[in-house]
Structure formats: structure tokens, C-alpha cells
Amino acid sequence: MAGIWQNPRSKYFWFRMAVPERFRDRVGKREFKYSLETTDRDVARLRHAEKLSEVRALLAQLEAEELVCVDREAKAICQRGLDALAKGNLGANDDGVTDLLAAKDNVAHGLLTFLAYRTRLTWGRDHANLAELELTGEIADPREDDIPASPVGFLNKEEQDAFVARLRALDGDLRYQSYTNRDIARALLARRSWAAAEYEVLLIASAANASVKMRTPLFDALAECVLRYLAEHRFQFWPKNIDRLIPQMAINEAAASAPEATTSTAGVYHLSDCLAQWRVNHRLRPSDVHKTYDEWKLAVDRFIEVHGDIPLDRITRAMVIDYRDLIKGMPTRPAKNIARLPVRDQVALAERQGLRTLAPASVKKHVTAIRSLLEIATIEREWISKNVATKIEVAGSQYNGHERDRLSDADMQTIYGSRYMTDPDACSDTMFWIMFMAPFQGARPGEHCKLRPQDVVREDGVATIRFRNSSSATGGETDLPQIKQKTGSSIRDVPLHWIIAEGGFMDFVALRQSRKAKWLFEDLEADKYGDRYKYLSRQINDALDELGVDASDKAFYSTRHTSKRETRRQRVSEQSADQWHGHSDGRRVGRKYGQGVSIEDLKEDIDKLEYAGVNWDAVVACARYRVSRLFAKHG
Image 1 (tube, rainbow, N blue to C red):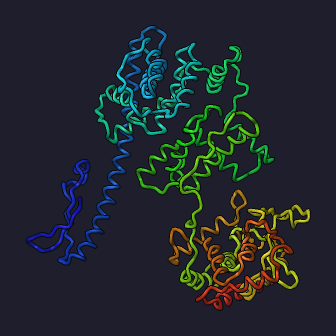
Image 2: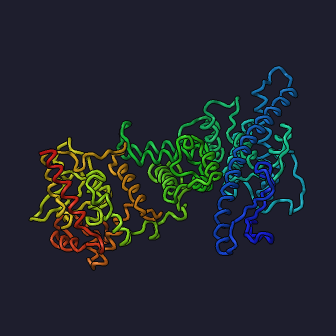
Image 3: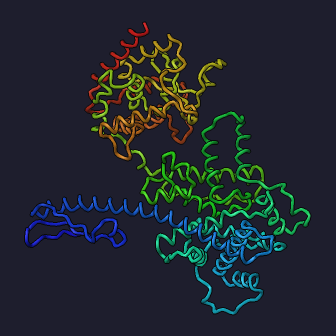
């Protein structure tokens, strides 16, 4: 524990904290001891807090370095131990047939068999008796309290019974039972049940002549290495298509179908088949790039990496929950060298280094992908009887009103009084207009970025922005850019705010129309999915960070929340505000021109937005200068 200590000889306060024993050799001392150079207790407390933060950062760095060393040491011990056990098995089977690869298979088979046996002992009396009978040929008479109260591996009866059914399907050849026993190793690995593999860990450590103690970082790291090896080991004598063959054998065994059908792979479907069906349903060609498809494929690839490419009927609810819980620990926007690592390695690295992990909404996307694909398999194709991912929730993924906050009056004054909005050379014209329009027009920034020059019109003398899908306005001209609005409510007409008009926006539009530009904002670069706002978003939010508007719950998108709040402050009707913001009011009121609130009434309401304290005259002057500069450049 760190504490403030006053030196009786100097009257100065000191920072004192014992160095954890495992770090003393690397730190070179037993205690952190620093003079705070003050006799004032209040000042000492502040300096003590600063010093404590420095010391904790140092200890965290030492901890991370130690964990990296521990992981490296664990992998080395695991490899040495397995090699030693394989060589011992090879020596014991000097039959001229067993080679080193076969010896490794023998070791893995023995470890998996005993690991599965001990795990099944925790599943209750019936499973324990069956496991004993299979392994020893007899049932012992243990005391009732010899069966642990908490199961490991597969936690519920349905999963346990399914495991036994798969095992029984392989009674004809004991070697193939290791295929099913690998599921035990995978379940323990997914749940990080290191203590359950104590025997295997200590056996391998002993074979490697290494000393490993329980409940230490080295034990945990070695347990993870051992379980991963057993979960992923592929036996040399297995048929090439065993991943498809064995599950079908288990299915037919449970259904008591004809023996000759057990070798057929027909009717066995995987998540990849569901994903392919999804592409068919959405009429996507092989060359088509689709964001949702790529996101779902990533979720499927990660699920397969965690649990293997198992048939749909072998996917359990516990597997999906384990997958969800594992994905929660993945780092968000990792560097390329981290992103290339396996999922579990990314999670371990994020935990060691304290990296920011995926937001609940991102985790929900992964779970939604699996659930939706299983829904295709259940309802549409009838490949499986039920969707095991139904009603699996992700805590924190539901909107609670605090995910994105509005900008305060002070924030608005800071942003719209900054050089970005008053200096014509501070940023591009596109960035300026997107920022200028946002709080008045109420649209999503991305909606403004995909406007075409012909989307800005005058309807009965009212300057209006029309948000449409490309099919609504192209008139069959295939060379026009393809546009798709987010929702049905997003298709709407929004009158231009008078302050934006004062800035010369219609002149800016006229120049774009005269040049027959395809896009209103031509200089935006789209990503591979056609998102024209992605890269600009980073520039704008970097600018907001520079201006000090950097709270975690605020971003440029907050202007949309700010706009909605301003409508309430100006007592604009909810129906009117919903209509120009592209929100559904729950009554499915049409959002197109001529339906809902009239364009004249919308114009009257939208012109009420002012935002107290912002000097819009300077912004308007900057806008006019930019427009005149463009005309001078293009004539």
C-alpha cells in the first residue's frame, strides 16, 4: 500500500510504497521512496496522487512485460513436454510401425481420454457411472460427496447428453472418440477453466522438467496452451472429411437410422451454407461488395475459429454465449499486427495491455449475424429444428439515451466561432458546408455527403433539399450515382434554413449544376462500400477534438441530437421535427412532399432554429467568400 510519510528529521512529506516481491529484481529496490518536497499536507496529497499514478503505470508496464514472458515460457514448456511425452511413447512402442507422428497422436488421445473422463465425473452420478464403466469396465462405489456440485465443460444437461450421444456413435473405433473428446477441451478453453486441466498441465510440465505452481500466471498460460493443443489437434489417421463424416454418424445414431446411411454427408449444413443462402436471398453477385455480408462473414469466420466448422445441429446455445463473451474482450480498431492474430490471442493481448475493447453494439452485431443465419437455417430452409441463438442478449447494447449527448450552447459557440467556420482557408469547402448545414437541416451528415446537385430544387419558391433513393430521381439514367436512404422515413423533403440560404448555398448548388457534377460535394472519397462520409467524419471529429469538444459521448453526429433539442426549445411540433429529421413518429406518416406537414409549414418551423450565442454573421460571411471564390475559379 502506498502512503504519505513525514520524515521527522526534515519535516518534508514522502511517498512510500513497497515494491511487489516479483518485481524487486527488475526495479532494483524493495521500496519506492520519494520526497514530495513540501511541508503542506494538502500539496503533499496532490503530489502523492501524481507519484502514485506514475508508479502504477510502471507496475502495469512491468506486469505486461512479465505476462509476455510468461506466455513465451508457457509455449516453450508445452512444446518441450509434448515432445518428451511423444518420444517416451515412441520408445515404448518399438514395433517398427509407430513413428513420431503416431506417437504424438497416442499422447493426444491419452490426454483427451483422461481429460474427458475427469470432466464427465462432474456432471452428476449417471454421467460419472457411465464414464467409469467406459474407462475401467466397472463402476466404483464412491461417496455421494465425491461428485463435485459444479459441472465443468458442458454445463447443462442437454449439452452433456448430446456429447454422450456423439460418443456412442463412435463405439466401433475407440480412436475416433478423440474427435468428440476434443469438444471437452474446446469447452474448457472457451470458459477458461484452467483448473480442470490440472493433471494434463502438471504432467506436461513434469515431462519438460519445469516447475509450475497452481494459481500462478504461468500455470494459467500453460493450461491455455495445453487445452488449445488438445482442442485443435488433428489425428493423422483421420479421414480427410471427418469434420463432415463424424457429425452425420452421430445424427444417425441418435435417430436410429439405417447403418448404411452413416457414411453419407448429404444434408449436413454449416454456417457458411447459411451465409451463401443469404447472398442468394439478396441477389448478390460474386463480384458484389456488400457491407452487411462482409460483417456477417467476419462474425462467421470468428465463430468457426473459436468452435470449429461444425454442422449447424451441433451448434449449442452455450457455444453462442461463449462466443459472445469471448468477442467482448477483442480490441477495437487494433493495429494490423494485432488484427492478424487469432481471436483468443487478441483477447489475451487486449487484457494484458488494457486496450479498449469492442463496444456492446459491435458485439451485438456478431451475435445478430449468427442468430440471423441460424434463423435462415431454421425457418426458411429447415436444416435444423430450432434456433439456439434466440434471445441471447448483449448487455449495454440497447439505446438508453446516453450513447450520444447533444452539444451544449458553449460547444456550439466554440465550434461555429472557430477558424474552421470563419477562415475561408482553414478547411475544404466540402467540410465547411457539411458542418454549416448540420445543425440547421437536421440530416445525418452522411445524407448530405451523398446529395446530387439535382436533389436541391425550388418547390413553389421554397429552396428544398430532396432526400431520395437513386431510383426515385434518376429517370432511367444509369450513369447517375446510386443512392439508398437508410430507412423509409429518410425519404423526405427538407426546406433550406434561411441562414444557410444567406450564405449563398443555392449559388453553390447552381455552380455544381452548371458543371453537370454527379455529386454536390465532388471531392469526397468513398470507401469500398460507397460510404462518402467515412473519411470526412474523421477529419471533422479530429477538428472537434482540437477545439476541446472531445467528451467521449460527443462527436460531430451530436449536431443531429442538438438540432432535435433546439426544436423543442423553440416549441416546434414533434411531427414537424420528425419529418425533416427523417424520424418515424410511430404513426407511419408519409414523409414525401405533399404528405404530412406541408413544405410551407416546415419552412416556417425550420427557420426558428437559431442557437443562442453563436455569431452566424461571421459564418455567413465566410460562406459567401467561399462561393465567390469558386465562381472566380470556374467562371
